Image 1 (cartoon, rainbow, N blue to C red):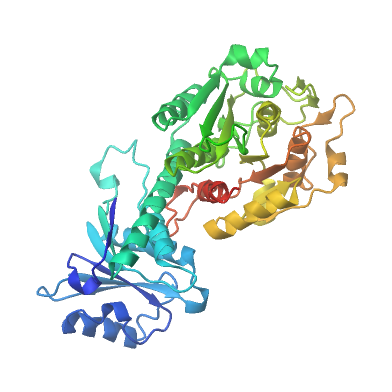
Image 2: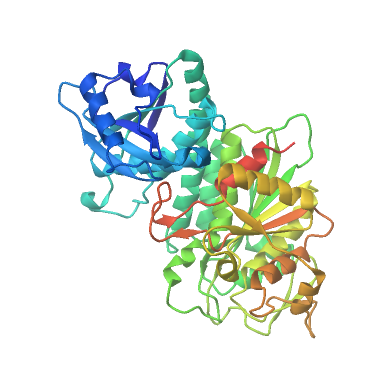
Length: 498
């Protein structure tokens, strides 16, 4: 989508649609619309005075304007209560606007800056761009019928009203489109089917994009994985015809120092059958999404590079396909990880923590100031938090606070779970250093505790995004399918890093 910032007010523009963002129970025409022709103003004012449009959050009313007026349609979109107005309100409103206009086959629209003390012009430009780009996303790579492909809104103009404000809006647009591009990259990777995306092709996609952004790349192949004694990665992936890979990206955005600020690690199980402990058929198709942690950290890295963030970042993706076969690892096997620690396999469907264990050990060679891993690790996360927040576990309160702040700004919620020492008792084994599953109780916390055993003295945080990966109904800027959750959060976290 082409997105422009204009110094002109809406009254000096014309086009197929004007989008008006209206607070709940507003009864007067917003100031930015008072320069419009009398007929258009009158129609908007009548809509505001009736009970048909109350400005509730997400409410939409389309007004059709006489042909001799500058706009053919005015789309009223409710913002809800003004006291609750924030940046995410704008994202939702613009996502709704784009979806509404796409359904009407309207190719372009104008929207004025609508803000308060909490949402300045730059922020409005950023989140409006994010909402519009994210709301218009469709994974159409495998659709062959034109009627199945959604109409695309091609252009949005944000009317700022003066030059100084337009410059601030423009800066926000650039950031917003870059962040949205990263989120949609994550969505496309996750929604690519398992017969096209497996460890080798995921690595190829990552390297292709990284090279365009001058990000250093390395891919560990099977021989290197075995030489490094990455038993977690190798054993999980050895049941598949598609052999494992470990992808390493290095972005050096701060030339003034050589040290690594942050290491991001993402679980890259490109398809998860559950292995020998095979999953039930229900929702098995969604298991293409078990590499969403990988997609999230890769996309966040690409976004950081495009934004030229002054941070030194290493991103590690252990990638494997968990399949049942005569070569697959089994319940009762003992896996020796890269750290030398041994793991008794209780369930082959608790595979993500095994590949992450090796990645956490590998990360130590970069001596990062902090490690953050992201994974669709446990179904228990959905039981604990529903689909409203990801689970956070950490060994460092300051790092957890940084992530909480980034979550609040990006509107990608997280909730910290406790890591009491007693929880570690659940993964004690009689025949190995630990078990890879501790049973049903506190499943999300136990998954986090398992990973903690491979962190050493590093500052570390773990995000379990298993409840946040997939949208089944569709929301204003999250269409059905992969949500792209976590990319905005991580980019905000990296932006704030000092």
